[in-house]
Amino acid sequence: MANITITERSRSFWTMRFRKVFWFVALWVAGVGGAMLLALPFKLLIRWGTSAGF
Image 1 (cartoon, rainbow, N blue to C red):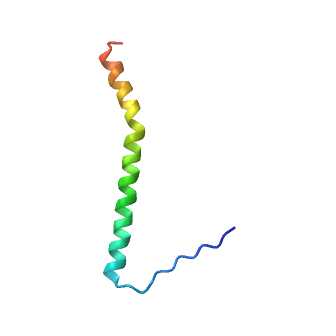
Image 2 (cartoon, one colour):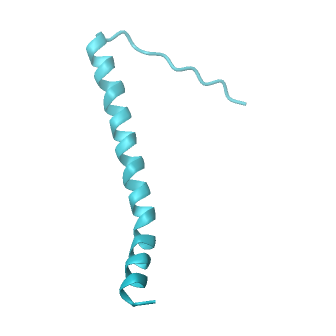
Image 3 (cartoon, rainbow, N blue to C red):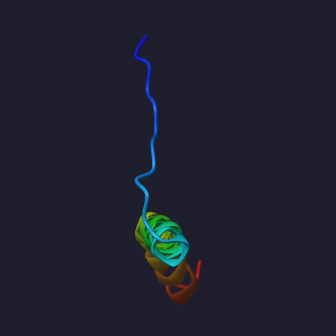
């Protein structure tokens, strides 16, 4: 098993804070966008089923 060590370079506090917040927001947006893309076919099927009058 690999030993993974995360080290932070000596940058300013605000630069590191900005980078962490940026990555959190970017991954959150990607996750929400992915979930919406996965749900889109089901949403369209439900809309088609309700408009067909079944």
